[in-house]
Length: 314
Image (cartoon, rainbow, N blue to C red; front, top):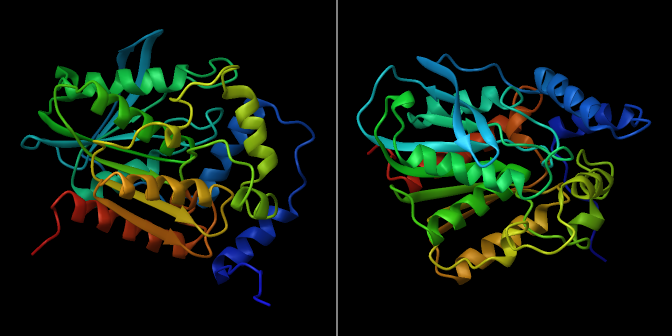
């Protein structure tokens, strides 16, 4: 009989031992979880990279201005694609500050501008507030707004977890109704893509950082009462989607959701790179200080992005 014990990397073992030793919260309260998430990132995430440009701006949205943060490792540049970043956090927690360091890493390593979107969160603003804001930000970016002082030639959507969901939903919206510049790549890191409760969701329900209890809580605050294909990108068509990168983690309840998304893209004939990080947890992209192996795997993701964008050095 095969051993069903999952592989856990050595640095991850210590990380999980610490996480699992912490007492669970007495109640899941959005404001407390937001503060805790930000505090955790200060301990687990790598330091931000130096940037020539960091600007806090706002773009018009369906319910008022949407806060955004613009990064560029260069003071100025020729026309180029721009990376459009959506943070994770179950549509309930996370903001521009929790993923600030990762955005600087993306700009520095890929030598591209990055625009991070502070979309509205549940429960104050349940679905479809988040995808509405993300699409609005994408269309604003595609028009090369004067505030950015950049000529945008294409859009790369990227995000992890809930952000991966929004990256895919936004890419689909821009493919269905093209913006002023094309979608050139979508990057889905351990994305939430469907409502499944079996498989990896059941196997890694607890004890591996992200829990099923947390996912159930996030969705109880975010999801609509009736079905909408924009809530779960796995249910939308994959035809005509841009080149794609999907990355999953071996200890993640969402592992199967990402794998199914990658398979659907391949079946639709989309140029797709699938990366599986065995022995890593959910949210590895923002645990790069606590987990050296997570930093290495994010290097693999960015190398794949360079390849897909035709930016590999010869």
